[in-house]
Length: 86
Picture (spheres, rainbow, N blue to C red):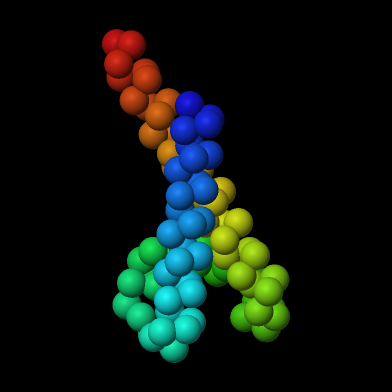
């Protein structure tokens, strides 16, 4: 279960990084998909000040993306396993 949830976390970070690069380089900010694809990372960023520099903010966003998706995935797999055992 833990490895599956960690794989989901890495997939979420990869998708988030791709969406971030597209938003930063091609769209130049304001891409509507950015808000939804990086929602877990943005949730973690909401606990910090907006005056953080770029690189620490990016690291916080991507690590938040990983941890939130991994935790949600882990809880999902636990619930799925318990439902299967009943």
